[in-house]
Length: 425
Image (cartoon, rainbow, N blue to C red; front, top):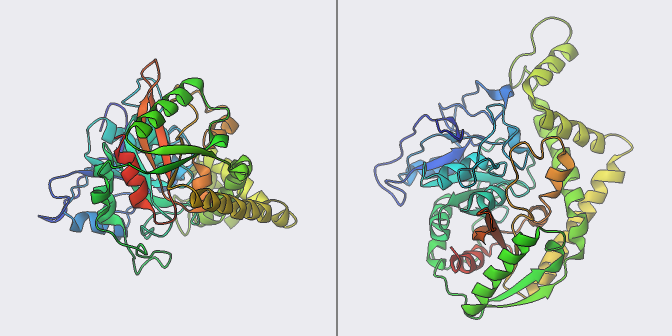
């Protein structure tokens, strides 16, 4: 275990004797199934669950020779922006004492930032890889939807989430992406990248000469002043290396956070219905009727944030409100996707601060969920559009707090964002 509570379970899983990741440790987020090693999703509901099979990404890690040193702490079922909603306690940011590491893959980013793992896997539903990467001063990639198998990932919101790498450098993250990417017969949503131009790691050459970068002004509005200053300093650095940038408009992002949470909570209410103490999860006891048993299991097994999202999602899907909320959210999602596609017609990548604020003090946002939800304003639109994005360290505030820069590419444009990001990290 670590002083900052980065691991839920520190049981080691050995990989093959050789391979591209031989000699390297790769920590795995605790919502990714590992055969024979408990997988809790940061929840009391699954505190004793031991999967009978490996997720496809875990199989690929083992085949590549990686050693998995443990399962990393996370917001319960991936619901949170600070890794403070875990049933196994909050995680502290090793790169900023007294601050949160971001969420929900906060444990994965923390163990990489602290040097307790060479690399890590996280999952990103609305920014859950990029946010902790930014707050902990490391690199995180959210791949294009369908590039990496979700088989064995315990679902929160199927249409939004992707597994992706976290590493100290862009090249390290790209090397891990090379191992886990590709079609999988167990996940019909996966496919090979349409165009192959060698390994992703080869794209981390730092060559941004001639690169065109679009800057959505909407994603700078309302951001912390020091975050904006650090962002522009990084953009000036890219310009000095041969890139150019221009402003672009993404008017739909004004409604992206609302659309994201309606869709994510609706899918969560459906996905988590199976955790009733009979099919999955801890028992609610055997006294009383089935409804009482189910209610007891969910009352005792789920934390407050999970209950809030399941209830709101159930409401959005209920009779009479489906068209009012869920259908409108899907319309907004199509608008967001169209806006990104049009902006990327005139730019190779789009750039923004990853998070509009530096890492928060621990406990600061727990009593105000709306503030926590709005902190995802720059990352959630990318998941709605199913595009790839990377967060790289852009610098620090005057108080030494890490600031991340997000680069968004076209679908299956991982090489573009890796190349651009490698010029900074």
